[in-house]
Structure formats: structure tokens, C-alpha cells
Image (cartoon, rainbow, N blue to C red; front, side, top):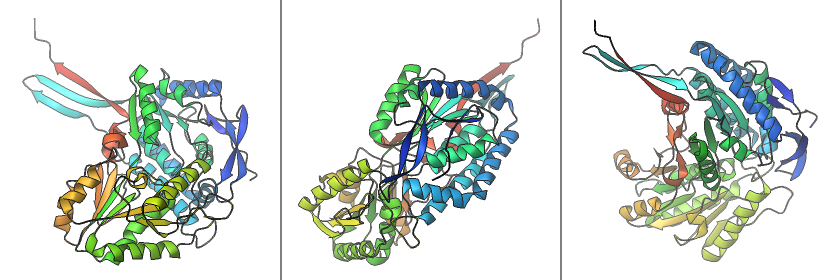
Length: 472
């Protein structure tokens, strides 16, 4: 494409020291060039954020919120352009790309409306204790390739409103929508408040270990999250880690199998399964197991798998070659352990396409059941005892989200209360709301995003404890 992308550093759009290819996963061919930063440019971005932060924090919160809202307005005005670019670099169908862009708009607006008010903890006997919140300073945002823009907004919104500045590093396979957003920010935010640097995964340790970075907000794999946490320990940075998941869908025995199968299918296959809270394994009562599996296979076979830019496409490609190879290997192993009802092969065409795959009759210890596949593949397992299936769902190092499906809502809720994850949805999926906190447990994360709790992650609690001097 003709657009010349540049990084935003200290209010200026700057070229990199070099460039690297950005590949369209629907063709496996480069379609644009991304500027690449070195350590010197990253240091310049950090210094600019540090310099800008006191002035940004000193602005009244209403002014910071108004500018954050202005970013949302500017993004909404160009939703079509951003959605098209997102499909080109990420692969998701154009309608899903539009949902991500509009979700980004709504997230910025939601945080713009939030406020952190001082709390009076005590006011008696001449002693007044007030807790108020101060910004942390410079935040490093490190975002992944599955939802590159909205996962940045989950961090940028609360950071800006609470008075922090930011250095953002997008994933090297999906940097362009972030850079295009930087062009909007250049004309709206004061210089240095948002800075964007791009790399091919070399600059992470510099950001996470840097003395002038007060907080790291990271979304990505659990393995990388552990490295971020370790690197941040040297300066005792604040960290928010939103990591992997192996989310279970538990189907209860009072539902219509085919009706719920459609909902579970969507929960597993949206964005080609590349969602941290996608349904990664489904547990179905033995009595409805065959019907449920057959409906999932029917839906998978009816899917239109193609370039996300083409009208009617329901599933796009896997985003990159490394993930394509990982998912393909999990499918190959699953074929030796269970029964493939649909899909089961990479598609014989250019690009990183894998047909939606449904696998039944796998043992619990199969890699496809135990690991996070992050692709369009769903293992379906049967159960007979509710206590047993709850234990199986919880027997994981992950604990991000899960779903329970049942006509008896009270019974389904009782099951949901026993699922050891940060979020459990009952009779719905992907019900993520910028006003509702989202957290992981176990190895799925640390801290939280969204809601008031997510806003507070970007602040330091500050206690002022007051008594009057006694008269001499």
C-alpha cells in the first residue's frame, strides 16, 4: 500500500532506522512496510513520555477526559479506513474488524467518563484520613496481534484519564493500525503523552527493565508474561498481565443441544479462535454428545473460510506462520488420539488458512485439551457427573474465563460459582464490557483491566493522615 507509516515520538511522526515487512495473512505476502526503532529511538520515546507526564498530570481531569474523548471521535470518523487496514494486517473478516474499531471507540469513551474520587477513611476525634490517587508516571504498553487496537485502548484509556503518559509497542505482525492511530493522536494529545515504537521483538527487555518506566501493561502469552514479570522485578514496577486461557464451556443437560451448539461454535471460532477467552474446550453430557458434535461439525462445514476482505467471509486466516504451524501440529496430534468431524487439515491455498476443525473422543490429557490452541479448533469432551466436569474444567494452569449453559439459570449459576476463573459467563459468551472489570487467575494474569478496577491499576494510593496541632 502507498501509505508511509511512521512512529509517534515526542509529538512527531518519525521514520525508523530501518523497515520491515508486514504480511497479509490471507496471502502470506508483504503488503506494507513498518518503521523499526532501535534502542536510541526507544530511549527518546521514554524520555519524551517522562518529560510530558508532569504537565499532563497537572491538567484538570476534565481536560484529560475531553482529549481522550476527542481521540474516540477521531477514530470513529475513520472507522472504515481502520477496519480495512486491520483486516489486511490481522486477517479477521471486515465486519469483525469494524466491531474491534467501534469497541475501541466505546472503550475510550467509557474511561473518559470514569473518575477516581478521594475517599475519606476517617473523620472523627480531630483525625481525618483521606486516600487519594496519583498517577504512576510512564506506562509501557505491550500489545498482541489478535486484537491490536482495542487491547491498546484498554490500557491507553485509563492511563490518560488518570494522568499517566505512555510508550506503546505493538506486535511486529500487526503494527499498522497502532501507527495510524498515532497519526490521530499527534494532532490531539500534547507532545510526548503517547509515543509508539515498533520492533521485531527486540525492545521488550528495554521497556520492562527501564528505570523511567513505572508500569508495564502487557497482553499476550503466559510464557512471555512470565518474562515481562521477571524483567520488571528489578525496579519493582507495577505490572498488569492479561495472559493466556484454556476456557471451558460446560453444557448442562437441560438445554437444546443444537441451539447451544451454535453459541458454543461462535464462542470458539470468532476471529479464527484467536481470542484469549475463546471457548477452547467444550464439555457436553453423554446423552446429547452425538447431537452436539454433529451440529458443531455442520456449522464448521458451512463456514466460509476466505480472505477477510471478501464479503461473506466468516472465518479468516490464522494471523501468522508461527501460530499456523502450532495449530497445525495440535491438529495432527489430535487426529491420532480422537475423531475429526470437520476440518482437520490446513487449506491448500496461499495464506495461513485452517478450516474450522471439530474433534471428538479425545482423552483429557491430549495436548489439544490441555494447551491453549489459539486457533479454529475445538475439542468436544463428554461427561456424566457434574462434580467430575467441574473438577476437569478447573484442572488447568489457566483461569481466564469460562461459560456455563443451562435453562435452569439458578443451577447454571451455582455451577459457574465453582469455576476457578476470573470471569464466568452464564448463557452468553464474549460479554466484555469496558465498565466491567476483567481479570485472570492462576497463570492467566495478574491485576486487571477495564472497569473502575482497571482504572485504579494506573494509580498509586496515597494516604494523607491529618490531625490539628494542639495549642501551646
